Image (cartoon, rainbow, N blue to C red; front, side):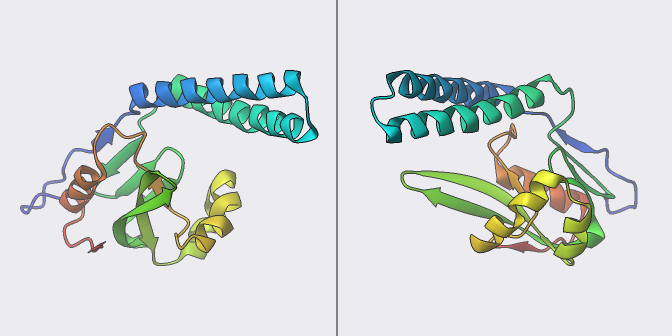
Length: 175
């Protein structure tokens, strides 16, 4: 909100389609590798690995295609709150703080914007099914239930936090 009380226009972040197309290409490659493992089937391990690769990366490819076909912004920030395509809508009064988190796996890392919620259980009661199903895994990794991947956003996470602070002055940003 602008200091004189005039509301800011919403800050809209579209899907970073170039990155998502690359993710789709990677999923398709892994499906193809899985098919090769299934056809080669020289060992039980290769057959199982191939089947799992086809199932998992095929599912990922379907989800990615749905995101590409949907004509909806990835993230919208306004003076009332946050609307994320996967997580849903949050009022600013639900958010205790925000922070950038990083999950490292071998040589790669994934950055997230975590919304630290006053009442995570209330959110989980209304959260989309996929969020509810991954909440316990996120908790084991030390994350809350509301995490926004930044690889599908067209700007770095720091720019999103700056926009959040413009819409919600005084928003707590944790390190």
